[in-house]
Image 1 (tube, rainbow, N blue to C red):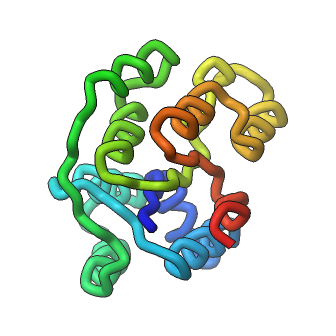
Image 2: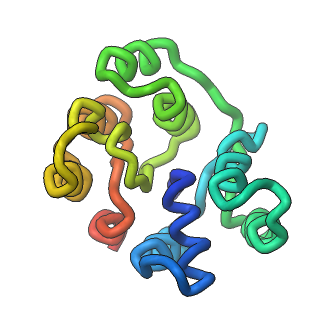
Length: 168
């Protein structure tokens, strides 16, 4: 089973390893590795985002972590197959291009789950909502983008604290 880990969740995981972050990220990653692996594009665009989010590509701790995951087969590098229909639908739903490429990649890479805390991957229209409403949308998967991905692409978009509900 293949999962996609959004860069902000990867940063949360790294912070947790350094004892400065929320344990939900480590629990989510452990859950993934109990049943599958992460997917990234063969050009490593998304791995670069992980590195940039955690302080740049010169962070030896992060570089070693990613190298270990690659060597252990915990990350599968896949071709980025773009789909114009998916891109168009995501644009119509208001998903920013930088976030739409995540869903576009996942739909062409047979990824089953996207783990993210980014409201744009659930419901971009809720971006200006209060934090309680945004958290509810993420936890319940009730946003238009999450519904579209589940119905049309067979991809579940989940916040890190609920991924275990789908795989256990």
